[in-house]
Image 1: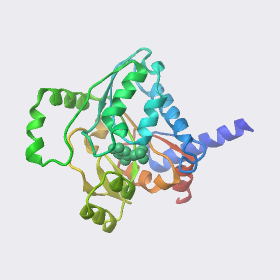
Image 2: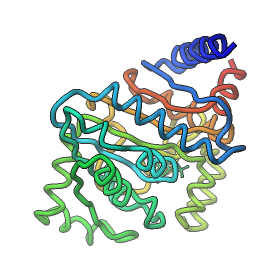
Image 3: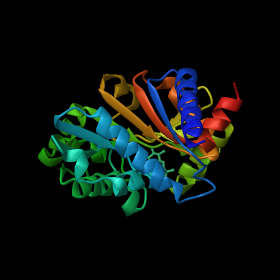
Image 4: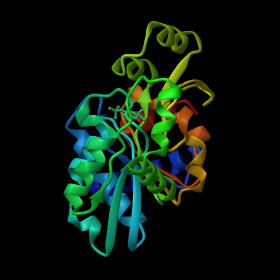
Length: 258
Ligand code: BG6
């Protein structure tokens, strides 16, 4: 019976990948919205997938923030650095999240868990372009940004638009915009609608979503029925070689729509 279930899940993974037009999907059973514990399993699945995907030798991994990514970090261990030298960098500057789920902290935790290295990217929040432009000339910031540019892997999460706008304490104006423009999801500081069109973008330095196509390994980790719309819309614009690690809650919701 277990075999049958496993085969069933493999079928579903194939179906989802082919519908979303990406290389591969991993679906864990259950729905993280209903059982928060399942985040651990989704994290573990992401780490396993990474171990399969990453080449031997030096790897530069750019990571984003969020609670899902924090759980991926938690599940990492030294197995990942067997035959590999890992360098973790935050993909973008801070995005107004609480410290433990910021990309800086997550990449540091990943380095700690795997015995790899990390670099930080500290750029102040909510500053004008005039203020942060000169920061780009700082040697420390330049070095980290160069690493982000050279990353061969990017690891990130996807959020529900409204939730993310609120969590990041965005102002009334932006909240209203997100509502009227019917944004469904957020990734890379970009709020996008059902067709994946960007309706608002938090201007930040670091990796931009249009660079994904040039990165060898692209992995998204996001689950829960509540994120189904956000996942589907985002993946419409994602490069074909993207891997999606998700759960049945999101997968079933996306697949019933077809
Ligand atoms: C943010 C990322 O920190 O986390 C976003 O920058 C992502 O790209 C979000 O949308 C997802 O958060 P969570 O907590 O739902 O995993």
